[in-house]
Length: 361
Length: 151
Image 1 (cartoon, one colour):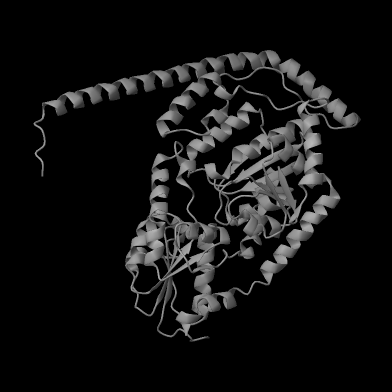
Image 2: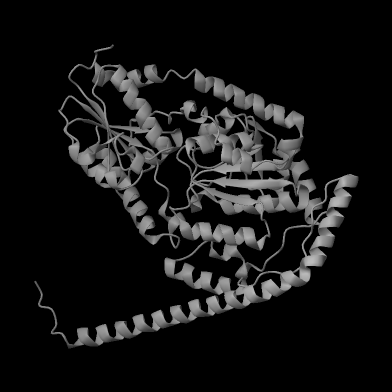
């Protein structure tokens, strides 16, 4: 066992901790790396926002204690008691900016959440200034920090743990979606910045005008914005689309099943801090179409298809082409394979050691 | 319009081709096109609410347009070949056969839906009136209080 960090700790502080959440998965991966280096490492989270089945996998914020030569990471994306604990820590403080969704998207759908997001963005500069170091999960997030006057940002792209997709797919879901229907998939929370209405409108054209033997599978929790979810269901009804399937939150085994069932992954979101499902879909050999917005061009990194300013009927036509045109599909899949190869070769530990060189020595 | 495939700008070739096909699709033809709903009663009129109250008002208004089960005929998808033809004919026949019973059930369901929507509207109107009355009472009471002393 490596004992580089004997007596020192590298802890992480989070606003919440949930099963299947990309940031929670990253925190677990980092914790395991720090422990393998010989450091004491734990994840501290606000227990009010921890999945009940994970209460033993992390520790309460009130248990957090640190020394001045420790390191403390804080994954920041919303105001929470975790930020206060982070700022009060005597350790070397590293804020990891995971992005804050602009509040305007939630106005009217959830005014309380909109206020929380507005406060988080208003406090972004001050919190970043009080941290000893600022990291960003994507170049897009780094640019947002620079726009509020923060310099010397280190970019550490969100970690992609493929093991979560290698579980046995949930048999009930595999059984539910049998039949030779073309399946278009979206994975992500059902929230307004994802612009899922654009995908439903495009699917309306695809299903009614191009291929009636098709379905749209929307996987993700709708608890963050139930009013937005209501609007989407009403829209599917207006367009008379019984094949729009709102599946809700999926377990890792469920997620593995949805990716296996699908023929195409489409992300119409207009604001993303990273968007890990794009990589998950590529890993599961699905052609990926995403809007050229937010951090998605960074995450795609030259792979798949990026689009901008497409009418719903045009997006439907693009989806159709990717599924039926072998030459186009081959170009897409080749670029995605190259992207996956670069990800597999990513030297995560070496990257971390280089970023933390000054503190670990 | 912008389309990048594997980091190559394909707007001029693939994009132009897609635009052309899309125009043909929009004209209709052998297949139907999605229903066009007037913007003021479309679900998308909920997309940019000013506040939660604004959203709720609009939602109730839209529910009123949607509280009935639609009993119109719908297109039955048909797969190619003889089996597709037979299956679609069979589905059309069954639909015609069951239509009378279906309409009877839909009539009862629509009655219940309509009553529920009315009850919801009455409830909201009552709540609004109660809040407005409380507001007025509060204002009257506040006007009786002595003015605050400057600190």
